[in-house]
Length: 321
Image 1 (cartoon, rainbow, N blue to C red):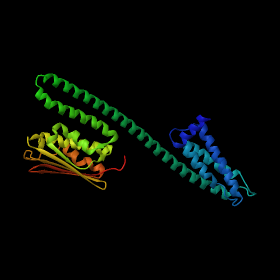
Image 2: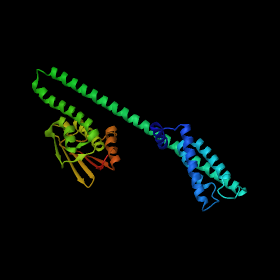
Image 3: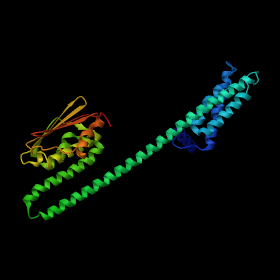
Image 4: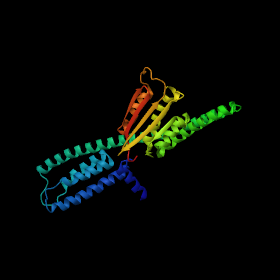
């Protein structure tokens, strides 16, 4: 009995196609209920012959498919003609109503079957997206694991090579550890989010804590926004290390943020860096900075000033994810 109930539940929800026997039994139950409803209506309107069978056709087609719906419509039409709850026998008018009844049933069955097809396609796409998301997570976890192992290997090799140069190793070791801490933080924020200050310190730490200042209150970022901003901060920090403030001995960076209702504004301001020359064609990094915040109703404005790069990032903080 429990198995039968479970099959009925799955069939009603559209998760699995019910067996033919269960579909026909459900259609028979619908016809019986419709006949009882017709018998009750006969006390008020004896000339209601086919209307009570429309719900039976609809539910039978929705549960068992168009074939079961057709059978239900045919049987309902026969019952409407054969069964009489008064002394009036079937006439031409009733057969005309039968034709109209079958026509409406055909449209109903077609509409239900079209909806079932669309629902099945949506379920198929949903399952595929879930499978691809699970595969993506597995791949990302594997890449993070390999990256961590490679960074550990680089750390061990450099420590062995620079064993006799403690002063050089003392400058490299903290930066390698900061890079490893950043990778660990990225893997954690994808699940639970993090504070914006912790995110910035993790990204900028490898360049030296005396090279940047952070201005802003503690602010927790939800996971998706935290990951997006981490990608943007990484791109900006990498460019600062190659061409901007971090590439010059006296270069400095100031990052500040303010929150107004649910709107977050982040200002990235580099000073004392190299003079900005001719701007090359925008690459992947620039496109990322320009479009990453669009999912959060945001935008990014980048200005190349004489004092260095000036970037303003604005977005909406989601209330929940």
